[in-house]
Amino acid sequence: MKKLQYERPVIQRLNTGVMNKFGTRTEYAPVTHIEGNAVKDLIKEYGSPLFVISQRVIEQTLKDANRAFKTRYPKVQFAWSYKTNYMNAVCNVFHKNGSWGEVVSGFEYQKALRNGVPGNKIIFNGPDKAENELRLAIKNNSMIHIDHLDELYLIKELATEMNLRPKVAIRVNMDTGIYPMWDRFGFNYENGQAWDAINKIMLTDKIDLVGLHCHIGTFMLAPSAYAVAAAKLSDLALGIKKKFKKNIQYIDMGGGFASKNTLKGSYLQGPDSSPSFDQFAEAITTAILNAGFVENELPLLILETGRALIDEAGYLLGTVISNKRLSDGRRATIMDFGVNIMFTSFWYDHKISPAQEFSQYTEDAVLYGPLCMNIDVIRENVTLPPLKRNDNVVVHTVGAYNMTQWMQFIALRPAIVMIDLDEKPHLIRKRETLASIDSEELVPKHLKEFKL
Amino acid sequence: MNIKKNIALSDTGFVFNPSNGDSFSTNPIGMEIIKMLKEGKSTDEIKSHVVKNYMTDDTTFERDLYDFVNMLTKMNLVETDEKKKD
Image (cartoon, rainbow over all chains, first blue to last red; front, top):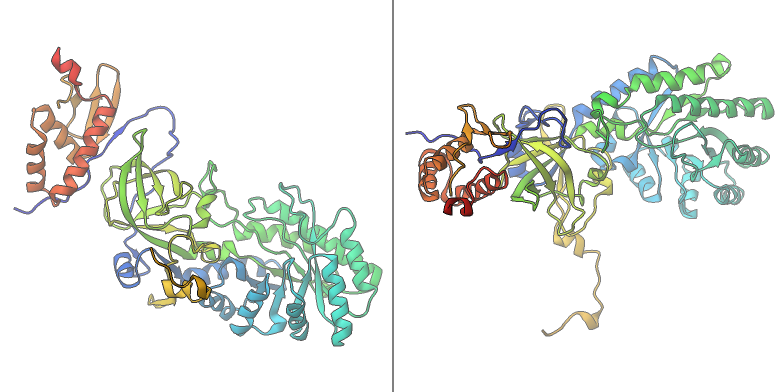
């Protein structure tokens, strides 16, 4: 006699009338494959946990973003935000599809150069640019976005010394009606700091002010804030034209578009609450087009969109380590991935799908990571079918920040695979080993030997 | 260990406690276990029945049964020892 499929016995109290804190059921169908590749096969080949990136999703998302902006504005350029995901293979998908590089450190600048991005297609942002890094950027004719006056004076000195005319923009912070206002980067618009910096640059012929830059926040859910920002940068650009007869070549609106993830505490799911590229594009381009530029003097519109372009392309595959009960009767499931490699679980309720068939019965659970740390919680409340040891799950929308903000803490970091347009997987980052961590460590001679 | 006498169990896995109005849903294997408990079967008997008929092993099922019975107790569906003595 053929034995029946086994499923762990579950019993769930039925609550009528009000929604419980676990919300509605998370998943109705298992995700057994990612673009033709069985989850089980990927884990068998590359180990668990495993990050998987879809080249097809990246390209499709970038195409959508390009369409949204280019159908509304004549001159648009995307620059790939390295900090969001600087795996070389990921960067190169963006570069192959026309994106420039946007970096915020000397390390990222070197990465962009090594990836083959020409120096004059690299935007160098951030508050920390060392003197030698600035020298290199000046030599390479990169766009340097000035964050503070000390940097401005240093660039001026270097320009004199190197006898080169650096291309710069200033980063402008401003009140766009959203909270919190990001005023720690750049020069403030409302209190005159921005004009002060512009005057300082324009009154020296050693530096070429080519652009204006802002980055108003992160995971922005209000396109209207971008309209305010675009209007204020346009106002500065037109003011510069009026005062110094100088055309600003580009307006860089930075990044911050929300992805389709669901923020913790959000009533609506991410796909229902996050604005589309069209909504952001409409807000930004309308503000610039209505600002009063002469048609042939419209500035190039640069976008440093990171999260919204890569988040949906990333998956994390993982395995159940164990199930247990908490003191209040809630199910606790321990996964082999935690906040060490999924930093974003601190602020998102990530969608999680079982990777094998399941019945319609579900259980309310807490998902924990494998770290021996109380903070290692993947989902505080999730409704999932009963999972047993060695079952697999797929975490969705993890492409942004997790592969750069991950921590080598307690456990080694996993491998990353990219699935190409022909659905073939490629290893793009090897699983870390003890050797890869130890190779950077040195033990003084007198501490090398001991007896216990 | 016995399921309370007045607990109603439907064929679709709906469990009802008429003494306090609590209702629950359980999956087919949970339903089978509750039925066997109502019939007064011992945990060993339940274990051998499930292992014989389902694709599972002794250890896995023992762990799951232990957890399930704990949940039944927590949900007030089981006769307590004190009551049994009465």
